[in-house]
Image (cartoon, rainbow, N blue to C red):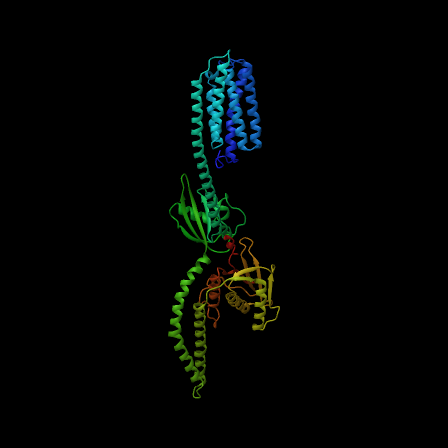
Length: 535
């Protein structure tokens, strides 16, 4: 036997094959024993020596029973078990031949099954060993008959043909076994490749920024990645659960889409989530069924991509404004100052010149704010300890606004809480929102800055809570629109710029609460970045 062909096969399939072969052995031996005990042994079974036939049949049954035990415990090793069992089987069959009219009994054909079975169970040249043992045992039986005075005459031709058949069986079985071995090796390699590919695909799907949900026509979820759970604000496993339980807002849209009367792309906000989602629906056709694939994307992330184009256009616009408006505005302001310094100007005219100067300053302030948007550098996010950052921010605001130390309070349960954002842009956002809060707060503490983590989405956030009288609901709808303001001297760009800066960092700024006791503006930071684990 060569080394490669004599490898020990210990996987479950080979042990199962040996068990099935041993079942055949058990049934044959049990049949012989049963026929013996009921006294119905047909000729030529045991015609020469009934007692030896019965003894060998019982021994054959005993071997098959013991073999079942060894197969279950898988000891001794597979190749040893097969070799010993096949050799014992060949010898027992030869005893059947001896006690049952020799080769004319037909028992010689059972050797073919033993040789084929052994060759297939142990791929390699060991099958030729089984064929040689079977051929020699049959030939030895005929030689015995040659010198026996009480038996039939030997049939060497029959024995020779059987020997040839045995070796042909071994050769064919060897070829088949080799092909089976190669096929199994290829199938095993392909199975490993498919398993690795499936794991890789699963890993990629789980780490995608876009949420993915697959559900069947009964709206039962079959697949959902980590991003989908985060975007929907869901903890735990949701596979095999109903879509209506976790995203009921999507059901009417799905029904309309399936009836070809709805959109395949829409924007929805889940009840348990904290951000608007762009939903894209695709139908997947399979062999016997179809499933529905839904992509979920954070609208704030999409707005961040769209913002690049908007800023490019805004940059060109502000360059034109700076050239066409700022220079004439400077000339107007300078001329008003010169006229105001003139001795001949009446008091009434000075009041008009003062209005010109004040409005020029206001227009210039608007231009400056717009230029800040267009000149804003690309955001560079980094981990920020929110408690430490807020502490420094509050100290600076108290100093610059001449406030008491108790006028702004920080409420942060987790002092190690971190968020990913550009520090400079976070400062600008917080300053704009806090200035508005200080303007409308009525009593101390004027502001409460609270930081925590959403239990549903694991997104960190900061709440800016003022102690004012709230905002009129009609005005609240336009709060983040550019140039919208209720202040005579305001530009209406503070909250607009703050929201733009948040979206540039995959965060969001919303009016979280508004009532007669005050307002709560909330900054929802980006999801914790866990995708670095991918590599």
